[in-house]
Image (cartoon, rainbow, N blue to C red; front, top):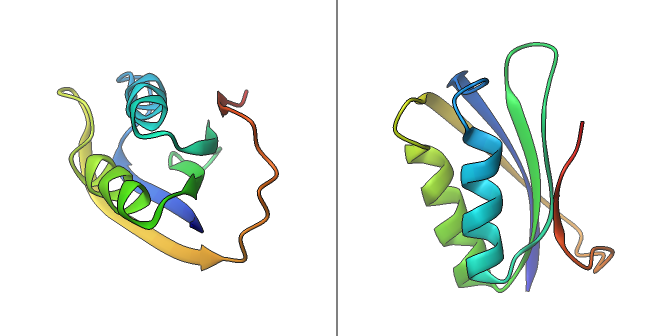
Length: 90
């Protein structure tokens, strides 16, 4: 199990990115959250099985059809097991 913070750069807002990530996170059994940032990036925290988190990061690097992902910065964090679901934050 692990926890990461991912910050996604590029054309990633208003293209269904957060819903795309939520759907995949739920399929992979990942908990955490995702939100739009004021600087145009999308930020997420993923907690789950190591392999599932790696798959989720790879999904973020591709994004949904209309997105143009330029970079995904991933930082490992201490596992907290604080989430029950995966949520889209406002």
